[in-house]
Image (cartoon, rainbow, N blue to C red; front, side, top):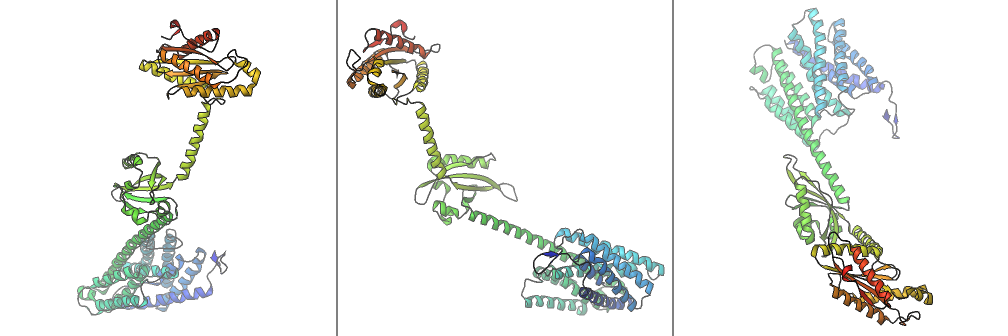
Length: 615
């Protein structure tokens, strides 16, 4: 599929365009012819092939083309290669076979390498470079040269090692330099990040140094060339390294073939040996450049990932309404997100300079320090709610989630990451909810009519005070109060008036109870109970008399009572509590005393006799 001008993708044609085939064919012809001229001069002077460029170019073409175009390009490459071989006076049969070997080399290199690299080849990535060097640079030339050697051995033209030099080394250098160049230019990657003049200056310097080393110098200075190549690679990039190596290959190859350069002065022996040493130099330089590029590219990718990660972190931190804080183990802040200013009023500079203990509510500091200690020791921590001082000296409720982060090299604890969230609205809602709960709970313990304690609270209080009396060895007293002639009051004045009467009596009795522990509860109907903790017999009897007087002072008219006003009868009981006793026994004793008071004419107090007291 290919993209058209409208942005949608259409199916790629089954074959390359004629214009494309012509461009590729002419390039192959130029590369094959130029390499053949150089190699022919070398062979004529007793040397071997220096470099073969067209195979590397065609491998690059195949790696960047759809698979269904490969056959067309291979056929084109075969005919161009065959024509060049025949043009340089090689036998037709030999030319046909050697061209076939070249196509086998190109096919194997392209097929194995294409399976290992992505649709967007990036040879500075170690995995892709490893596959390229193994399959395209080494394995495919070795296979093709072995096939060519079989033909040459049949013709008896040269020995095995000499035949291997003729093919293998030349193809290795051609593929290693031309294929990366083609891939880079095909994908239109930027050649150099430097200004054009600086880039040209580097290549001019490389050509100058190469001419000096390989043409004029009488001593081995090839390391100067390698330094220039590394300089170009570090400044220009991978494409610059490959192009520079190709220039050195031509300059050094030509001068070596014509008897110039350090290899001719430093080495004795045939020209083939000197060319072979030059090829080794180019190959070693290629590996050095490639590995340097891989290391630089990996470092650059790591740096970009770190920068991208930091950018994402800052974007998230700055866009979040939560405050994000990065601090050391000692609490010194390293980073505070901008939300701190919006939330607390403090500027980021103020937050970075200050101590976190200065803005935490004093009562919350121990819990905050405990949370940090748990986090530092590797224990699980939960969110902590605490109060934080704003710039205007008011306090804001925050919720802190803290995590320990470790040094990437030593894995030792390095500091804390806090995420602080404003929970003031939640705290207000929780407070309202708690107030509502307390209100409901209070209502559940209060008599709805009189507003005093109900039977449930009476039972809880009586049990609690009984247990306390057992523990402390103190006395407990209860008063059981009954409104006299209350039924007739309801009959005469109605139930609404009866309710009003009960509320007035409860209020009057409540006023008499002056101690906080004393409890007045509605027992049921017109009956009330007073619980008097730590109260002896005399004190309970005196309280009973005050209750009678309080009711009498209410002056609630009651025509159905012989006393003319509403009155009450009181049964009083006091006793010691014990583990094997029951507080209900005390109520029963008070009930018996109340019964006697009512039998004696009402409007009076009766105290439980000694035998009815709880022992």
